[in-house]
Length: 483
Image (tube, rainbow, N blue to C red; front, side, top):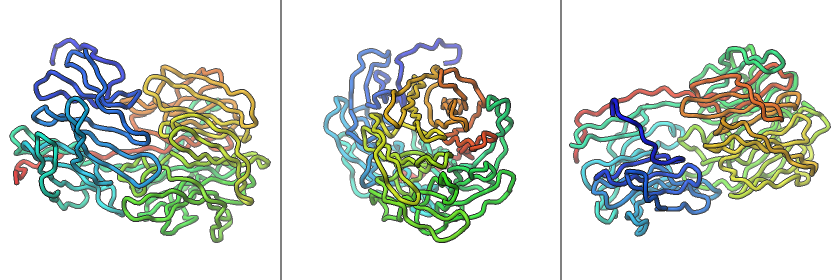
């Protein structure tokens, strides 16, 4: 490779795996998200596996003998959590299930007929994991016997495990993820962002939800007490103050337009692998007092107690409350093909349906304009940065693009409603953009972090960012047991 010449084989290909004899490559199409096969020269590409509706395929990998291909199959739609490792022959037929475990994280091959895989621990230690093994028939892919636990370590995460060809040494990434809220002060009319300051100082998961109407206090949700609860923290304070705590899962706090309520979403705890088909929109008095139910909401934005940090932010259902006192809050609920926007009042509950948008909810972010009249939607696309602005009163929609910026993971309106903030992902981190409704984008920040959450203050002074941070080291087990 050193001194060699690179040759492009194919666009929009991800998770590529070379066959043992070097003649074929299996990969996942970044656009259609199907699994494909092609020759090692990039020719004769053909579809191998197409995911069922509501499912996501990941990490296609060859068996050591080259006769079968394994891949993960993850249910991402409403319903019981399902995560299966299965295999097929090289023609895409004869599907055989190897492992079914809702806490499956990663896998690799040991000696022929030996699967090593990573499973997350149950809550409250869901961000830790351990290794299991399973023997199987390398010709048919059928399991032989039951899985066996190999490690019972605490404080570890076994990511990206690999074993040397002789099966004697295991290497893995021990990574620990957290998220924190950072604040950046906006300058020059919101077109510049001053250096970021860290607001949350614990080493757990912290995500910004909204702001107080005066722009002095951030509302956030955090699992610092092993459960997602609602907090508030002043822009210049070092500690957060709890607002609502309890055994339920709580997310995304925001202030009601009249400033009287903290509005948030809540779900009950369920048994492992269980489905959360509905939750509640809740309200708690700003001045303190017991929370009250506003109304029922459909679905859950991710898998309950997921080991994946990115499952704890964004998604559907979700809601936004405008800063104009006379405007209604808006709830977004989704199925596999569309998002439905509905008006609601924190005191009176659900009102009328506002709009339906045909989109893939699993790759869509949105925000409500400060006056409550428009919705901006961005879709996570590897090749384009397209935004759709919809007028909720039924007027014409507008489309704009910030391409070549792509992989838009978050969108938010500026305080004056005249522009948008966006988070654009890449392999090098996240770029925070500010774009006018003419599509002209200006870079505010380039960061090596993943930043999926962008929340501007209503006075236009600050930008709160939800930042994902990894602390990772490579470890090795030099005498990995063969039995």
